[in-house]
Image (cartoon, rainbow, N blue to C red; front, side, top):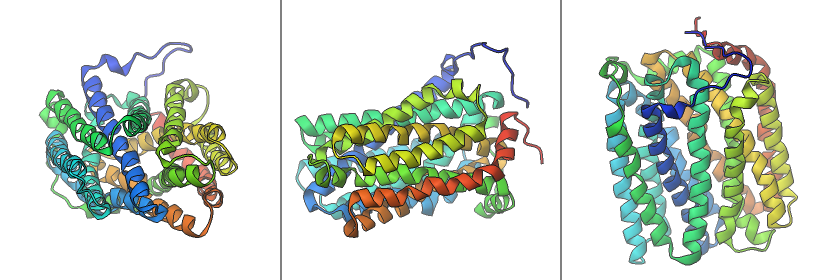
Length: 413
């Protein structure tokens, strides 16, 4: 289905005029706030309890390694069963786990191993639900609007990171971590309610395919363009994960601030991402996807280099912003390209590989940055991670044709 080309200067109608998209987006946004609230609070909790940067990195490993282990299974489930039901069941389980964490914290029984175990369970539930949550989007959004919808959908991630980080900093400033963990547990109700309210035809949301994950793997391996996109997605996330893992230590050792202020750097990164999403439609109408991707990866490298040289919180905030801004530019383009290159009956499984690249490989970056910080100073580790976005640049030439093809909606061949 070809994209609809509007006259120059014409304003595109808001996707939020669609009831389905409003419900879907709001549920995901609330859940993302809770997830980032949990992530930031958990990192601070571990740092204050153990004073170990390595354990902070290990917490992030426990959160994201399930996406590497279980995303393909999540994609299979997404393609076999009602995607709304998959989302409801997994978020119910996540809510129960998060509530248990809050209760343990309230009674001073939340140890580092228990928090690590809970992070693994929450990550496992997310790994199963994420392919379904992503693959259901084309069921109520036109193909010609999918890139824009994906960009706006990414906004819930960035605004969730911003809101969750700010909320974590506020709660930790006036109350205990127990309250932050409790708010996270409540946030899982939002996507459950959203899926119950979503109106999607049964034929669109239920697939009859009974294949295995191998079919999705074969499709991906036979598609050089998809492999290139997945690699670029993974490299785009390296900068974000390095910042999030090192934030408590960076503030403590370099900027001489309390670890509780770590949320400020994460919040600044998210603010940059939010600004990037708001400008996404304007920029994509004037620049090619390839040029935007090049600018985004260079911006990530520059942000990490500047953050490494930051001696105070104001400089740190200033250089955290472009890291999030770049993320907001590259992920929507890459994600929309994957969805348009994937047939409907395999989309859940293809997007499970996106989940692995987007989240499942983050434990490696988190463990690498946290482990390197044991031997090197945080600024030196940031300079090492400058290499990751730069490695993505040579891939963009090979990928430009596929990305340009998806912009027109032509997925043949």
